[in-house]
Structures are given as structure tokens and as C-alpha cells.
Image (cartoon, rainbow, N blue to C red; front, side, top):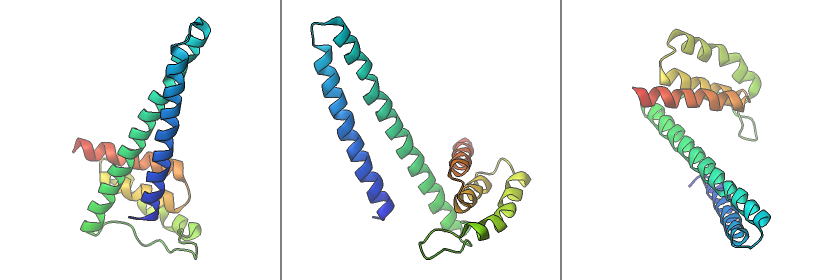
Amino acid sequence: MSRYLAGAVVMSLLLVVYLGFALVYASILVRDDNWIVNAMGYALLVIPLVGAWGLFAEWRFGVGVDRMRHELLDAGQFPNQFQALASGRPDKDQALGQFDQFKADVEGSPDSWVAWCRLGVAYDAAGDRSRARWAMRKALRLRASK
């Protein structure tokens, strides 16, 4: 098990414990005689629901990205040309220099989940996490529709 997966499992377990405490506290408030306390209890029930939905969505995203990564690795199409620094992170300057190649691939075939996945890896190597997640979500949608 990689350290990233272990970290995700630990953080997920901590979130589940927190959501469990919120659920228990909400049930205590709901059983009170005061209507204001009841309203607070019902409002507090929303937190575990939203948290569980978010946890499920993030794990689904992570599993989908991991499947795409393995598929690209098996096909020899995973972009691994980014040089790593001593910390293990990709060199941003070097990644930015190669970014235009991945962007051109997407512009050339905008319906290719492979091109979008590779662009997401390039965004991540360049340090733009929000665009990397956006590109990976687009790749997941395109892969699901194929």
C-alpha cells in the first residue's frame, strides 16, 4: 500500500468518526423537548449527509483516476517524462516547458480521454491542482461515455 493510499484511508476513517459523532449529537438534540434544540438537531443532520456524499465522491474520483493511470501505464502512454526534484515532486519549470505538447494533444482530439488524462498529469506536474482535477474529471466523463 502506498503512503498516499494509507494517508487517504486514515483521513477517511477520521472523517467517518467525526461524522459519527455529529450524527450521535444530532440525534440527542432531536430528542429534546425544546423546538429550537430540535431544529438545531435536524440542521446538524445535514453535516453527516454532506460529508458522506463528499467522501464517496472523492473515493470514486480517486479509484477512477487510478484505473485510468493503470490503463495508460499498461499501454505505455502514461506521461512519465517529468523530472523529479529531491523531494520527489516534479520539476515545475521542466513540466511547464512540456505542457504545450499535452495541451496540443487535447486540442487535436478533444474527445479523447487519454489526451485529457495526460493533460491532467501535466497540470499536476506544473503545480496547478485545480485544473489537474478538472482535466481528470473530464477524462473520467469521456472514458465512461466510450
